[in-house]
Image (tube, rainbow, N blue to C red; front, side, top):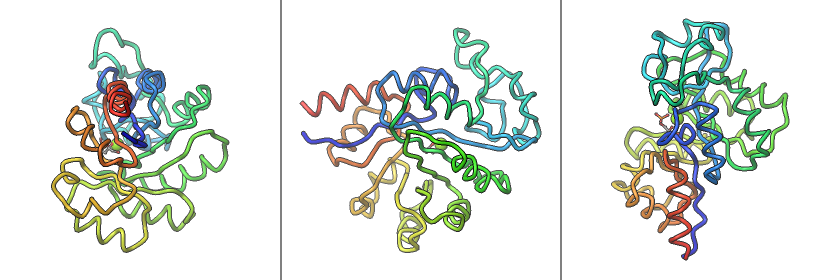
Length: 245
Ligand code: G3P
Ligand code: MG
């Protein structure tokens, strides 16, 4: 079977490593993924912090909001121990550290950077991230995404060429409206919506999340979707090989 679907590692190899850490991203590369997804916030001193939640509580041994802590404080936290004792001592990475890791690995895949501006807005983060990438050279394909349409609009105003994708937690009606607005190129919807809503059958560049079960992976591969975003890239790579025959 012809399957071109790319496999994007959600927060790295989240299923087998502490999410959004350098260990997790390295594992995803070693697993043979085609892309890496991650989430970025601002610390109090406006450094780019890689984490999913707005607070450090769930994934580290600390507590409190990221934007109330400076980078130095955040660097003292352990981002591995809650996942497993084996990963004790793992630190929270900055965006620059993740990018450096990808450059060191000569990673030519997709780097999907989600601007986590849907709960805390982090004013100026869009411009800051854009300027950072404009100041460096990198081998990967950068795709910005966000649940916050305003962040995508800001990026569009800065540079209409910046590759943007909209994340969806809500109804396909919103997806339809946004498609018409030309604000975005691609759609990153919840896989549950994709399976339920006929609208998505007509969307070309579909990269649903979080595609973890064998059944959902098969569903996406059979439809030859642009990509899947998964916590288990190694499993997805193996299944895709089997289905390709
Ligand atoms: O980018 C896909 C996915 O990461 C969106 O949801 O909450 O895991 O960031 P979340
Ligand atoms: Mg994300």
